[in-house]
Structures are given as C-alpha cells and as structure tokens.
Image (tube, rainbow, N blue to C red; front, side):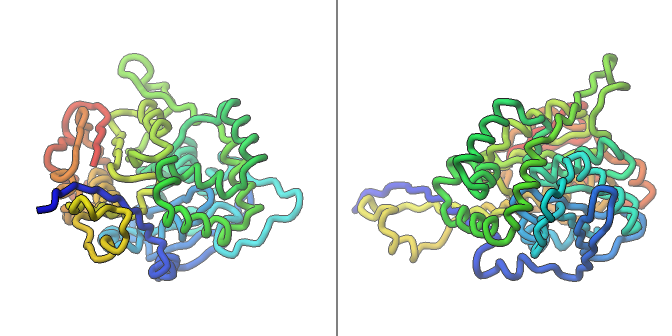
Length: 404
C-alpha cells in the first residue's frame, strides 16, 4: 500500500471572481446621491429604508477600492441579509473614487483625512439620518474614527478593519516617496492591502484586485486619495486609566470592534490602536486563516495523497473536493451580529458560525469585556446581546481579544 502523505493546500478565492463579480458589484434597492459639503461633493449610495430611530450602517472603503468592490460582496453575503433586514445601509465613496468618477480638474485640492471625516455630518443631515454604526476598512476606518472623535453624538458604534491610528513617520514617508518613484500606484495599493505571503501565494486573488484597481478606479483620483491618506495626522487617542485620566483622555466614546486578519500587513497597527482605546468598550478580533481583506472567502484543502501524487500534478486536484471551508465574510458577519446585539439591537438573531469555527480553530480570549449595552437598548425594547460560548461580556473591564 502506498504511503500516505498529508498535504495541505490553501486557496484564496475572492468574492469578486468572474462568475459573480457582476452581481457583487451591483447595488440592489439603492438610491444614489451626490451631496454637496463644505469640502466638496461626496457620492453616497443608500440601500434600504431607515428603520425608525435606529442608526444606519455607514460604510467607508479603503484606498484602491470603492463601496462596490469593498463592501457589496459582503453585504450580498447570505448571512448578512438578517442584519440588513434590521438596518438601512449608507455607502460613502471618497471623492473621485466611485465607479465612473471623472478626473478632478488641474490644481484640485483633495480633502485631507480630517476634512473627509467632516463631510459625514453633512451626509447625515442631507439624508435626514440621526446616527450611524460605522464599518470602515483601512483609510475608511481612519475617517470614521476621526468623525467619531469630533462628533461622538453621531456615532453609535464602529467596526474598524485594518485601522491605523498613527501618522506616517518620516521614515515611512521617505520609503513611500522612494517606492512611488520606482513602483506604480497599483503595486503600492496592493502592498497596502496584502502581506508578502499573500502577494506571492494567492496569484488569482491578487490579479483580480490588480485589474480592479488599474481599470475601475481613476488613477489620478486614486493618487490624490492615497496622498491624503499618507499625510494623515495621528488620531492622538489614549487609553483612559481610572484615577489618572479617565475624565481627560481623548478616545472613542462608542463601542468599537477592531478586526484584522492574522496575515494582514495591518496587524501591528490594529494592535497599537487597541492599546489606545477604552478596554471597557473595545473588542479585538483577530481572524485566523485570513489576510488583508476579511471580505475574502478562503478555501482550505486538506488532502491525504499517496506519496507519488503530489501537488505539482494539477489533474489530481481538479477531481478533488475541498474538505473544509473558512468563509471569512461569515465570521465577520457573526462578529458583527454579536456587536450590534451588545448595543441592544437584534436580540433574536441566529448565532451559529462563530461557535462552529471556534470548535475547529484555536480561540484565545483574554480578559472579558464589560457590557456595552447602551441606554437606547431599553428605548427600542430589544434585549441584551447573545454571545458565543466561553465569552463573558459581563466580566471585568478589560479588552477582549478573540481569535477565530
């Protein structure tokens, strides 16, 4: 009998593949708006109808993307429908980054990151919205954080993916300038989204995003957005310490869920952000088997092959079926459900995926997190949050770190 050898193959498949890209780039039940603000016009897409006094879910994308390529696949994901049934969604495109955006005129001064954040109150006013729960990726996470610091009454909660609270240091600035002279903007953006391992191993995924960044985003407009992000200021947030600075510390006042993939180039930045936030209102979710974009579906093939049938023989793999799936949008959806439940919304939402994944993967929980239910929980008559087994949201006030 041939000796068996365990072979583990990992294939990343984006939700933007050729078969479903058209569907995932579509907006369903949407209204588009070009809203004039003090810092220019911003393109906004409303999906669904606001539900009473509930906040909307407001998204803000990263550099090299727009709301369609960054979030539509995620919001069209099956498990997200339960959430969008309860909340309207407001997608914000950074100026000039939306699909089909014309180039800016010569000499146009692109808004700073602070000014991008200051556009959001005008968006809410124009759409007659009172508050939002934000979901931001990279540059978008920074913009939403800045808005929450300046206008805490407008922001009920934040999901910050790959957030970097720090200004770009002069060494980083010099490195980016040098790379800008030697590398095209598409490669710079790809390196921002994906770690070295992903860039080398997941060629189909990288090619998908390479084509999108190069062909679907106006390159001059993208350069302006990238320059604005690289010129960002430090958020200047600090962790409040009881008896020391809890009354004076500048930090997010709303609940925050920080998300990062364990292979993301943003891991250190997200951990740094977590160290600066109020531990009683912050959860850090580190997603296993995930790279720079949690909207990506990752398929892991674990195969037992005879020694003479190796991975270099592709005809063997074509006939084999993947044995285990790690749908990152499913994990993120589940985490988001717990997050909004902790704010007093969706008490009866179904919770299964994270509990299954936790039984199949390592899970490390630091100290618990105090309850984040807010006063509006009783206002809406919706109960307290459901939580996965082993996580106590009523425990001591320390940041909760979860790997799933």
